[in-house]
Image (cartoon, rainbow, N blue to C red):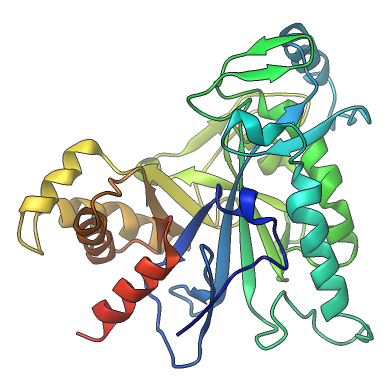
Length: 343
C-alpha cells in the first residue's frame, strides 16, 4: 500500500483539520494509492471513493444581518448571493481569516479536473481526479455551520456563537461556487423531473444545517443530503417554504446517498464485550435499513484514543455493517483494515 499526501491539491494546514471517511468494505490491493488523511477505496458497490468532510460558514455577517437575511430569503425561491460575502472553511477560529472554500478546495479540485480532461472529446467520459483510475468517485461532505463547533466565531461587527446557522443563507453561496463544476459536467446530479442520474467525478453531500427543503425541491440535485441514520424508517417531512410546498417523503439515495449519526455513548460498552454482541446487532438494524434504501452509512463521534480503543470501535462498526468510518489517521486506519481483511 502506497501512501501519498494531497499537498498538490490542498494546503496541509487546512487539510489536516478536515475529517475524512474510510469505506468499511475496503478491498486492499497491492500498489493501491492512498492519500494521507484521505482515502481512495471501495464502497459496497465497489466504487472507488474519497470522502472529504468540510466544515463551512459564511464570512462577513453580523448577527442582526443573519436574522434579517434569513427572513428575506424565505420569500425567494432561490436566494441571490451577495458578492461581498464568501464561504470560509476550518475547525478553529484562527483558520477562518482567509481560508475560503473556493481557494482551499474548489479551485484546486477544478484545476485538477480541467487538467485531467484536456483534449477530451464530447463523446468521451469525464476523467476524475485520478487519471490512473478515471472512474473514481470523490464525495465531498460539506458541514454548514455558523462557526467551528465548540468555539465562538468573530464576524465583522460582532460576535456570533458556535451554533448551527441558517443553511438557507449558505445555500446560494454554495450552489454558486459549485456551478463551474456543474457546467463542465464534473458533478453527480439527479434530475427529479425525469428520474435520471448523471454520474460524474464529484458527489456533493450537505450535512449539519443543510436545508433539506432546498435539496428536495431542487429540480436538478447537485447537492445531496446526509440523512439521519437512526431515523431512516420514519418518513421525512418539510414545511412549505419559498423553495416549494410542504412534502412528506421516504428516504432514498436520490435525496441522501449517505446517512450518519453520532455513535451513541452507551454503545462504547462494546469495548468490553465479545466480538458479536448486542451493540453490533443494534448497529446492524440501522445499517441494514440504510442498505435496503441504497444509502451508505456512517457513525461519527466514537472515541479515538487510545489506539486500541479506536481500533476496537472500528471493528464494532465494521461488524455492524457501516459503509464508512471516520478516521483522523489514515495510515493507522489503512494498516488496521489491511490486517482485518488478512485474518
